Image (cartoon, rainbow, N blue to C red; front, side, top):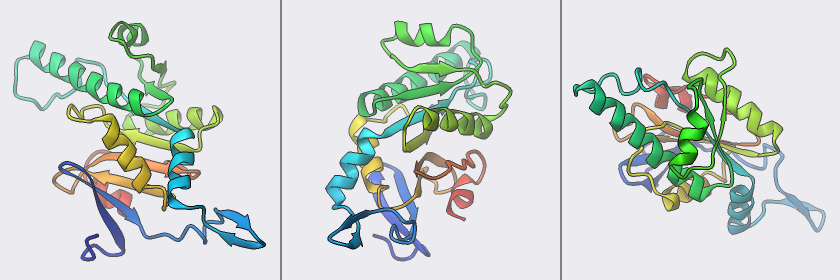
Length: 212
């Protein structure tokens, strides 16, 4: 734990990334079980297993012509890189969690993903233009399906592994909302919300926005 970050707890959760959580008390949030007439928190391992079983992920994917537009490479290579990064990210999430939802208006995206071996659900943006509105739309859809924990993720994490996803999820269980900053500490790669609104602020100086 790095105590220099106020008032956050910092966990090394993924190589090159940092999980930063507001030091919010679960007792004040009203969560926990009533044992012997006294409200106590469930053991950590039990909270982790509960979170895993009730967790789903949401990603908003741009059309290929707009994805990774800042890469200084030929257009066909840029599109291919964006697609393979998205596949790597979705593959890790799908192997770690029971449900992965993609929000995108790309035509035939779901069938294309299934041909790549990914059984994920794809829904339309339905007028929710932009990454954050799309993620919020997806989070509401997952809540309606009964998922208590929502993990929002960027779509370009080529080194992401299922065990890293679960480590992030497990580390986040003590707090209603947590996030994983990127290697620079400026952006955000993941945002996790347990039984609270997702409230995504991806893009730009999103780490500060999520930490506020």
